[in-house]
Length: 68
Image 1 (cartoon, rainbow, N blue to C red):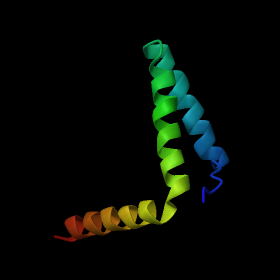
Image 2: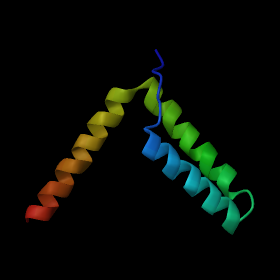
Image 3: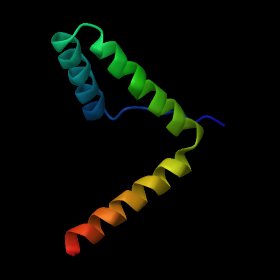
Image 4: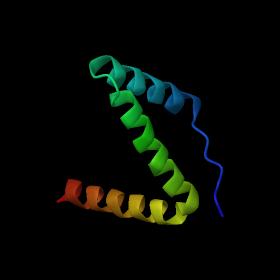
């Protein structure tokens, strides 16, 4: 089951800015960026629990590193 993923308006604005910046600095880079984000979103939509788990583990490691 694929989930419907929507950007928060602020995230959408950041995405557009990042695409435009990439494209201004190197033609075609914005498209590569867009495809990369699209692939990740598709992966998340197919299996969001794996992504949440991975993010939780990363955050826990960050907190552990910060406190040591």
